[in-house]
Image (cartoon, rainbow, N blue to C red):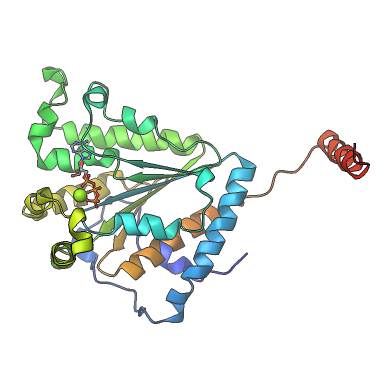
Length: 294
Ligand code: ATP
Ligand code: MG
C-alpha cells in the first residue's frame, strides 16, 4: 500500500472530550509544514492509499465510513470533499447535502432525513453539512425552530442539551452498527472568509457561487462560533470524536482530512473476504469450465 506519513496530523486535531476551547485552534495553523514541502506532494500517495482502502471496504462489505463536514461558508467543504475523494470509485460512495429542510423533512424528527441517506455497508458516505445544523443555524436563528412544528410542551430551555444527547445516542447507535463516524469542523478565520467571498465577486467565473445570505450569516460570526464550540464540547466522544481542522490554507485542510480518513480506515484492518472451502471449489470448477471454452 502506498505510504502516507501524517498519522500525527490525525491525532493533533482530534477532540474527544468536553474541555475543548475553540480559541486554542488557530485557523492559520499548518503544523509547521509549508505548502512546498514534500509532505504536501504526498497527497498523490494519499489518493492512492484511500482508493485501495475503499476497494477493501467495498469487498469486505461489513463496515461503512461516514465523513461529515461542518463549516462556515467558504471554509472549503466542497473543495476538500472533491480533493480527498478524487481517486475513489464513485460506485462505493454516497454524498448527501443538507440544505434548509423541506416541508416533508420538517414533518419528521430532526434525525430522520439523515438516517435516510446513510452509507450502506461497504460504502463511504459524505455529509456536506448534516444534522449538526440543528444545533448551529437553528440555534443562531431560533425562528427556524418555530417552523419545526414541535409540540409546545417539548420546547424547554434545554432543547440544545437534549439535541446533543439525541445526536450522541444516534452516533453511538451508528458506531455500534458498524459505521465509522468521522466528523470534521473546518475552522476558517473571518478574515480568510472575507477574502474568499471577495474572490467570488472579483472573478466572473466564481460569481455564481456568491450568495447574499452569506454576508448576513457572517455578521453573526460570534454567535456561530459559540454554537460551534458548544457543539464540539457536547458531542466530541470517544466513539465519534470531532476533528477541528484549521481551514485558512486549503492544501493543509486537505492534508489533515486525508490523513484522518486513511488512519482511521487502516485501523479497521480491512481484508479481502476469504472464500469457504465450497466457494473455492466453485472457483476451481468455474476456471476449468472457462478454460474448456464451455
Ligand atoms: P456553498 O459552500 O456552495 O455555499 P452550502 O453548504 O453553504 O454550500 P447552501 O445551499 O449555500 O450550501 O446553504 C445551505 C443552507 O442550508 C445553509 O445556510 C445551512 O445553514 C442551511 N441549513 C441546513 N440545514 C438546515 C436546517 N436544519 N435548518 C435551517 N437551515 C438549514
Ligand atoms: Mg452557502
